[in-house]
Amino acid sequence: MPNNSGFSTETELLNSAVENGLGLAYDEHALKQMRERHIFRQDVLQAVATGVIEGVEIAHGNEERWRISGTNVDGFPLTVVIRAIRIGDTVIYVVTTFEPN
Amino acid sequence: MTMKQEVLEQFEDDLFGIPVVLKHAAIKTTDETGATFITIPDESGLAAAIAMARAMLPVKLQAEDIRMMRKTLRMKSKDFAEAIGCSPARLSRIEKSTDGLGAYSELNIRQFVCARLSKTAPAIDYDPEMIATMQICGNGVPLMTFERVRLKKAESRAKTDTWDLAA
Image (cartoon, rainbow over all chains, first blue to last red; front, side):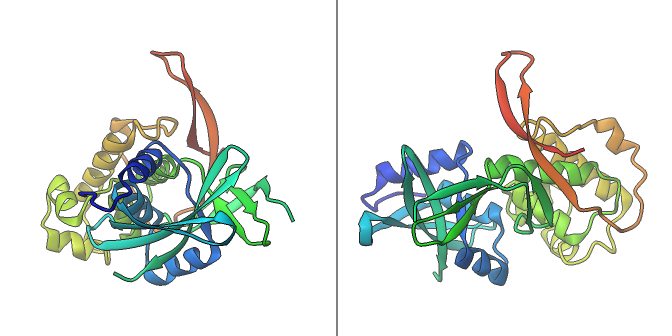
């Protein structure tokens, strides 16, 4: 997917990390949405591994929220919002919500 | 409250397409606000292990098994249909109900899935001959349990963690 979002470095890092086995975390809201909308974990991996970071929002406490625009395995648009949490030197990427396209 | 992490002794998941149990692998994190979230290491590897283990299990494939296998292969319906030698319309029907799926087609799907995923899930036993001679029985898939194991590669002697069916 061409990346004209201005977050090409972050996008490349995230795409590559997920392709190389980075485990995504999911919060309760995201899991509920997945069950309701029949979104598989494989679809989320596909969207995050091949999608583009369209926006980064800095929330309270310097928490970053990334809006990733990608597609599911079937090629349909899937937008995933992820927040990056730091624990020491480790960053955990938590899938928080799926936005309508 | 500080951030807390623990490895769960057992975790049930149904979001790979079929329900599975994970032993000593899923990590539960509780953040400063008390919110919890679960991380499963190497989700792609686990999806591959689930798809292969199901393909090697001689119980008739269900519609959700085939959809799970296709999604794990990250193939669109059209491409998967072509790879297994059927039309996209027929695959669409099979992904709703496998009532009309013949034994030959079923074995063909199992072979294709295992051949494609065996490198991603190296701990899952795969023998093409076992699939070729498989006697498929009726319904009743047991709930499969997976765990992380350490494998040593023959060629490089490097050790890697991977997913395997739990005993």
